Image (cartoon, rainbow, N blue to C red; front, top):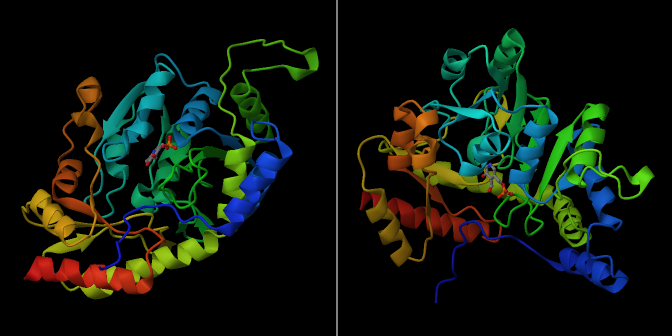
Length: 366
Ligand SMILES: Cc1ncc(COP(=O)(O)O)c(C=O)c1O
């Protein structure tokens, strides 16, 4: 029987087992333990930033980023239409208003022109998402943010290791947020990381994620806080995975080349376009059809051949509770309607991926 092709399954091995066993043997399985600070330190070192704070999820990272910047009631935050819902919900958690704007049809990322049009006196921040690992046009977004005095919170949850003009995604804004959910570049089971170069923000974030506890005074909490701390178990997995990130990125980039070599000449599809000088993380390799195409039928045919796929995110403004925050976003809608994510897990070998790409080609061209 032909070996299964993996869509986005995590890649776990002996180093992960060894570190997890250390947690169990030492009894340090909860939020206290040596792996948490070590993971934070190595993560910050990898990205070349001063500090990283480990948290429970990418969603928690985005929530605390907004909260720590003092964004709340009466404020507006500009977010892209085409993203996972977890980009938008944290804006509502802090009581601010998400302003959902359309994406660029080529890169699939937030359209800087649409961002500038959406700015009002109440706008406080822009939250660019490096969708599926493809770096946003950060030069232009940072320029807009400077011009209007806005914060930039990067949703880099899908783009760990992605590079834009020589710098890692997540390191451009005031705060960068990452996710270590099971299907991401590296996983901690579930977890996230907040990065910033500002030591004051780091202190504030550490305090907030630990129930806003003033430890010097015992159990004294001068304000409302959150329990968003990462556990030693999760950090053990994270540290082991981080040591393999280079290997994972090389594999993801090889997969991208294979898909481009095997499918790149088909005039009916397009890959996400990249800005000059960027190298994505290729968390997921995705394509879109340029004319109307029945994505569901394609997905079914590929499933029959043992090739799992996944739909592109539904534009966030399509959710009933978010409709009031979104103008029509035709580009995001077209990509949702005509796009599909292809197997990209690093559990796949080069041979498996080549076979999958050839099968996809046969299904497409007959
Ligand atoms: C674009 C985007 N933002 C935010 C998140 C939230 O991350 P998590 O699932 O770790 O909460 C994810 C991942 O799931 C995501 O893909």
